[in-house]
Length: 470
Image (cartoon, rainbow, N blue to C red; front, side, top):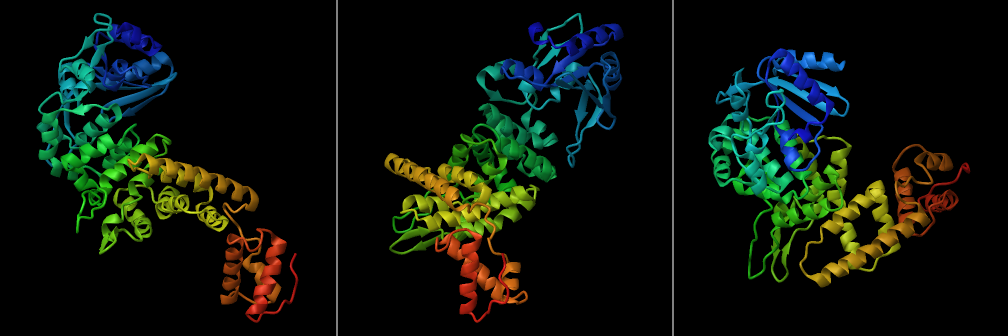
């Protein structure tokens, strides 16, 4: 273990521990990540004694500032490339109506017992008498080797005491591609209602970490199978299942969504693109209809889905800003490139897509490629080839017509000056005609052509030119 303790902060902690005759341990994620061969810049230190006073002494020795959080009994400092948090060893007890523990001074064993999972209860001694010695009372190393998420103590009590740990168990399983212990799974199922004492912000923070994991479907399958998803995100659960009438069924939109999510994770780490994948078909349940002689339809699910996005973001305490608007736009437009890829691609259709997607066109194309989940290799190859044609067409039209983030070459003010009129219905009519003419390719996206077109359309509705504008 000593080879993993080369950072100078460990040497300072070890010397101070000897001077003060206290025991100090690195514990938790930093130790776990050594065995996972992952670098970590966050170091948690447990002191058998006053953690805050020890942190202040370390900060003075390193000549850095220390931040003290008396309510939590912790102190934190930054030194070189690491962030180090200090706490005194403690034991905890809980009330049934809160996940905030009652804290008392304790031993190292007490501190390890209060940890959420065995893989996070590993400790390495830093004081000179035991420097580098690994303390693993709950078999955390064995669980790392077998890729198992397990609690140090009875999981029913662990999850009841702090129900957020149910989300954390699933998050670690998703991030590390580990399996959750069967006993822990049953404990989650028996403690489902306890999640209601956790704030929505903390739940969503864990959910986002699951979404950002390499293969989020691992986490979502655990959320679904345990029943947690039914409580925290029922709209997604509604996607589950297949209905069959007259021998005709539809795909299971829950598992399709998970496949789209995993697909898009292969090409982007962007959280909001991943949320767009989750929500792209979210309105299929309320728009599902069976048409005799045809089968199942989900007409308008993209429009209704876009309207659902703000409500879902508000419900989950996600940001109601441009991130939400991006997801909403991608949900609204997600069928458009797929339609283009299945038919002859006209310049007009491409211009309209560029006009509506703007700078988010690349994000939209990533989502649409991820949305191809058919197992039919012929169809997959056909879609991919057609998507390449669509992308080339997008590039060609963009270079020629400059439609992305389009601003009309003739403004409403220009129209009012040209015909000597005020704001009103005529201005809107002409602006729409200009936009449609450019998108349809009737006139180029240029001011002179647009002015001439404006004069012509004005005359058609009885307007006369009173001043020529440049």
